[in-house]
Length: 219
Image (cartoon, rainbow, N blue to C red; front, side, top):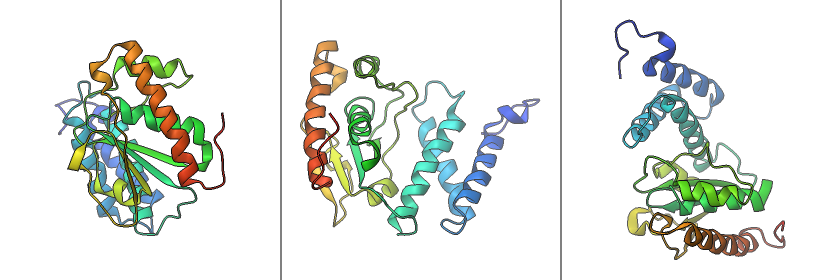
């Protein structure tokens, strides 16, 4: 990951990741040590690079991914307070079902819940049909990206909802585990993806009544 001869520092991934590590180390001072921050940043970059087709923005995506992971790490250790339930959606590629579920729960749940998503074998990008059917609901997924499933986000979650990843999801006591049987949008036409989206929305409404007792959904 070294810079090419004459490559400006701003375009050098190593330099960008180093600056990212410094920023995150300052943000998480007293929660996670600098060595751990740097390891998570570089691990995140490497994990995303395995499937990325375009690497231009990869360091900035790695920063976002590492930020989420470090927050989850702090939460799992009890060093960062969880003010609302943490929900993790997991499917195989994190390019369809889990992305739709996360986006819909954010839309419906608002600030009553915090949402993450991941894939056991993440793909290189969100499915175009998924982006289209979510845009119909006023949800923009253009800035989202598939993320690999990591132990820290599972540990931080209060509820883990799987959608076909099978035994790839680690099991920890004290968490709510659910499995939603949904067709893979990658195998469907646009109308089929819409149907999956609407099925997910029905599940979301039920999930909110279970994880936030006494509260209805914002419909």
